[in-house]
Amino acid sequence: KFQPVYVGDVADAVIAALEKLEAQGQIYELGGPDIVSFKEIYEILSRYTGRKRSYISLPFWLAKVQAVFMGLMPKPLLTCDQVESLKTDYLIKPSAQGLSDLGVKTTGMDTILPTYLESYRSGGRFAALHGR
Image (cartoon, rainbow, N blue to C red; front, side):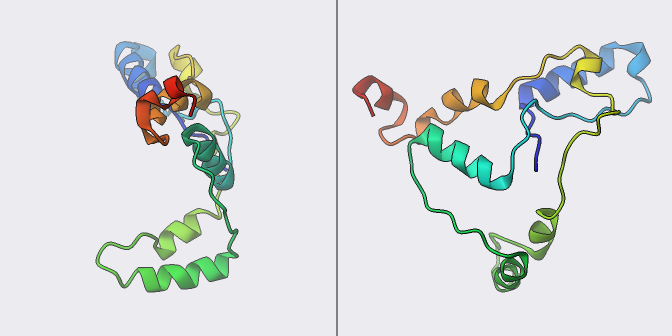
């Protein structure tokens, strides 16, 4: 699982941390309000771009074999380290200081993605005007 964070929220957190004296020397874990799996991320991308795709879930051992072969390429699309990283959840610890401790209101994926992914829809930015 992942907890994607909007870059604007990260920027606001950096500014807040620089402005707050009590933030000096503190550790903040930054994550957005949504917790999603890798598969859910692809489903969300498909929904907002209107591009339906079929997904095949690979066992980790098979993904690792694929990564070994891809790793032989000059710019591999997948590496063994990436496959290993998918076995770990990247979530904010409940006890951790985060965006709210810096006074930053988190922005959910549903707020950002429709506009951000608009140009990837079939027909681009103006597809919605034509009912696509």
